[in-house]
Image (cartoon, rainbow, N blue to C red; front, side, top):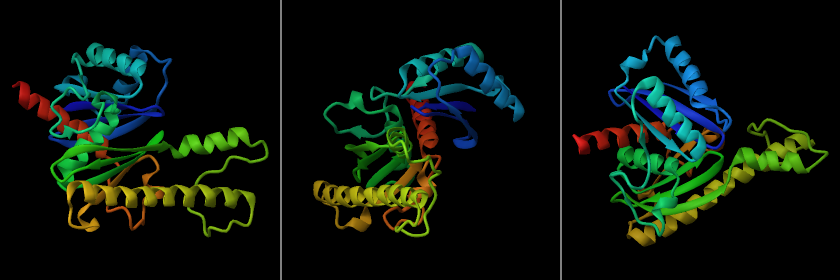
Length: 266
């Protein structure tokens, strides 16, 4: 059994993985003021609630885009689980080649989702991750990471509008009945929902065209699109542009990276 942790700018995802399968997972709010002991007490309590003991774990893996929190969680793994966690970076043998100018700048979360996606679907892929930023990553038929695109995420875009428009009240983003809103709340929902959805579809379509040309792929149907992240069910559900929705893609990628590393060093 291994402990898999992804530290994002907004949330921390924690998964328990046994026999390469995710048994259970939780999300915590990312807080740069919290210390290793505080995280340790909370995570151990979550495990105890599921009758899981820290002694059951053979190791841990962390991907982090918030260095200070990643360091505290690394200390937590050593102090509470007695394991020095494997930290995801471009220096590991990931099983995919990173064909970009500066691989050290690729976020650990993007590396993990790319690994999870390619090893799961074994096809040329576009991976869409709805996180604090929405990322789009292109993967070749041979598993080469080719780069991608980054756009502002849904949550921070909505917060920016509400923070700067005094007369607009915050709304929860849900699927609107029509693109033509009949009140301010519905207009906001319509603008955000259709704006993000058509942005996604437009980027996917352009990226498919470039991927086909770059990799000499026969047609667009050969390129599969897998979506993940916090808003995936809302934005990607029912879209003809998305072939697979996999909310566990990142944790699956962490599991693959961990076990690959263990095989290399053993």
